[in-house]
Image 1: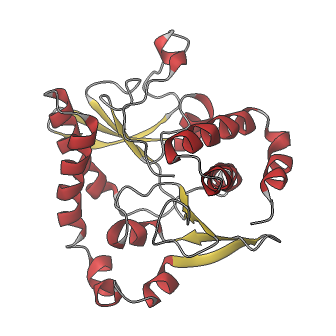
Image 2: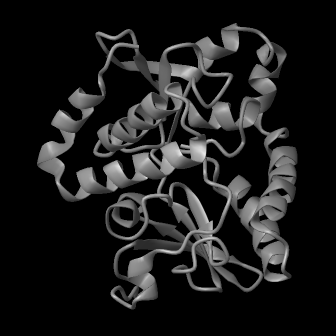
Image 3: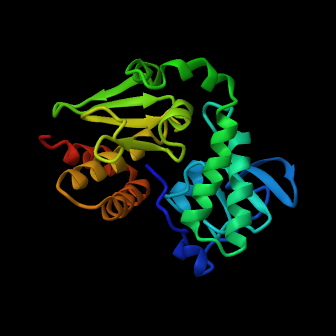
Length: 250
């Protein structure tokens, strides 16, 4: 699921239906402070279930305006280690958007800063020699989660490697009809996604892929996928049947 390139506003927050208090969900722990910003580790699943499905790994006020202006939110990771990259990104994105720079431009410039830091990491240096070699896909693949009868393979992937070598804004999941680096008939799910949420992300990605395969734009397909994911999160007993409906001949 690539982050859509415009700020998100959750209608429920706009209408004042939710009130967030420190120490309550979605807050998990304070992870320090940088400049005037408090860094909070938050419950990403809680946010996606109750506030905004499009919040995946990080956020700041000028993209998700339910986040207080003096806070940066980082979703609790299943596989820790990227938090400092995210903070570098958020500092730049926040500063630029606060000054009036568009989200598209601010995110592009923030990604450039983040990429420079990622290129210094141990993981990047370990695999950079094969970054343009097909073998890098073998390193990205961690576990085959599901093989559907229509030929679609669903892989749990090393999200950090994907962000290091393919697409720095990759979050949650993705598929071959959007990302040209994803092999044919594959859906990828970030290993930072908890086991409890994998099927919700799968539903989103396979629905989005089906629509894009028919010629729908990513933007429209993403919104449709977000709607069906939201429905499933609030009607969990229907999740498996909704996934089955998406298993159509490829």
